[in-house]
Picture 1 (cartoon, rainbow, N blue to C red):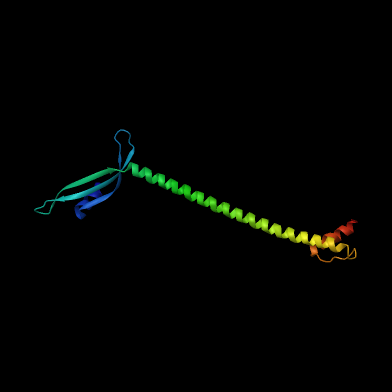
Picture 2 (picture 1 turned 90 degrees about the horizontal axis):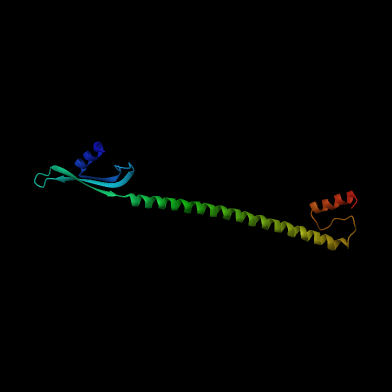
Length: 143
């Protein structure tokens, strides 16, 4: 501290910054804001002394830490919400695709059922290959 602080105060006229002191009994650190300033002789302008002011900033440091923790919780909640939104969107997309596939399959089965009365038993009209393929396998197994 002395090697940096005092030469700076003497050269520039002042120095301010955060430091830590130790409690004499407990040894716990005490965060402080320390300001040192040069006092010049009014007649000669030469430095004659150094003054300083110390402020305990423990409460401010605690408040800053609480704010950081709160900001981290907010960030975590935002990330979780974004994840839930992505999963929900994926679920909705999956449900939409499943609905479309089921609708087309249902329409095909309905067309097959309605037109089955009017066509010969071995014809495959009105459906795509997979359903027609199922009919073909069913006929081969004797159904």
